[in-house]
Image (cartoon, rainbow, N blue to C red; front, top):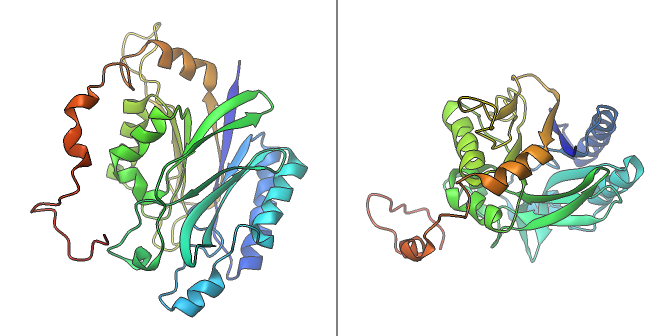
Amino acid sequence: MQHFRVALLQLLPGKTLQENQAIGLQACRRAKAMGADLALFPEMWSTGYTISRDPVRRRAMSVPPDHEFLRAFASCARELEMAVGVTCLEWDDSQAKNALFVYDRRGTMVLHYAKVHTCDFGEEACLGRGDAFYTADLDTAQGRVRIGAMICYDREFPESARLLMLQGAEIVLVPNACPMEINRLAQLRARAYENMMGLATCNYPAGWPDCNGHSSAFDGVAYLPDLPQSRDTCLLEAGGEAGIYLADFDMDMLRAYRQTEVHGNAYRRPECYRLLLDEQIRPPFVRPDRRP
């Protein structure tokens, strides 16, 4: 049996990049001791989801892909033989981006994703945006797992998860930094259910910055042959306190389910979805602060 164990590092950040590096490395070691195959940080861990409106300050807060902060987590992944999904305010192509780097158990970067759906109605309006969703094969001690990524607000668009499903994603990593209340948790449950894939979401604990914890994991398996009714797809929902929470995904069960169930891609009608590519925005959805 193949299992994939994701440690959700629901942690309070420090005040500096160096503090967050130290806190994060210690947490990774704790995650390894718990049996994790991958440790996942909340959104923009390098700054504790702090974004400066001042471009000079924002540039100083950002880290390029070869920065010591990221290299330290790559080295930690190699040392522990455990994958690490670390988040940061990344400096890329003359702009700052909200990014996730996934290093495999050998310390090799296998996934680099920049947030596509930035919150342009808030402080993220000053950030650059990603332009695609990506998946990658992650080698674990028990075998390969196809992973993908969304970041926070990406979750609110069903197209994000659908594109990852169409690329073969089995488990989607979701760094987060917002209050996780019943409706946002329901979005995650729905994304897992409708795409027959696992979702692992890591949030900041209560009180930072306006978060409330409730990191979660959904495995997407709604029905099993020996059960008379549907099952709860929620593997884990943390409370508000800081901590490390381990989500255990049964990959054999998920793969068997994806082979036979009716969701996902089997019965879709893409020829009927052309309106999804229409870029015109009509009332009541026009927003003056939307960036082109």
